[in-house]
Image (cartoon, rainbow, N blue to C red; front, side, top):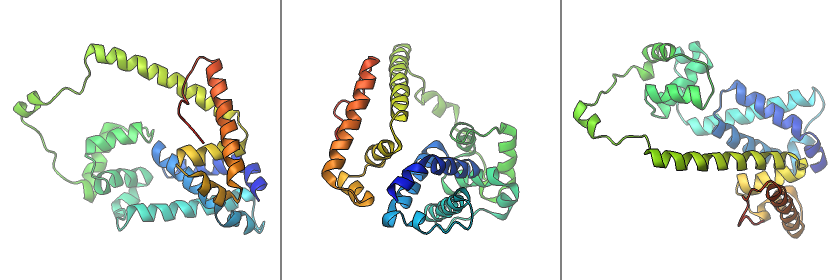
Length: 247
């Protein structure tokens, strides 16, 4: 079953991406959800795959499984909060906007920025204002601060010197991140999964061994080899980025 999971990993990731786009998850939410899905598929000795009876295509089956998992996650995170009738009539964007303001406590301005930046939605300021006026949970007056308070408020902009340093650091980090992403993409699916479980999800090697029903010692050795390959690939490009990272 492990080999079957690895064989269909690209399909699994495409289905996850479809569900993420459909429900307008932010990049952070999408990353967390992807981890939850893969761990769910590993549970009980790959029970999801063992329960597949081929009554539909594997893609359809996985879409149903992963969508149901998202619904479970949403209920557990949202708690008792439910979209208003007006938000449901307005569609996914209206529901997301209401969630950001009513449940998460963001202001209208903050919600507008999150919709555009984190969720990549093309929505105008006027459309956001219209949503705020229409939805019951967001019909609250805006608060304006006095000029005295605003004049004493620290500037969010860094000094010119700090901006230069920040820009240089950001450029280095961007180059390192791109190189690391490219290096990881060259690994086989099994190694990519090990890295995701260990360093993205923070799983202990003992937990990974139990999930995947593997011996712990060989798993340590394999992680060590994978990290060695990544270090070598980055060093060949003059990039240091895995110092202190151990299996």
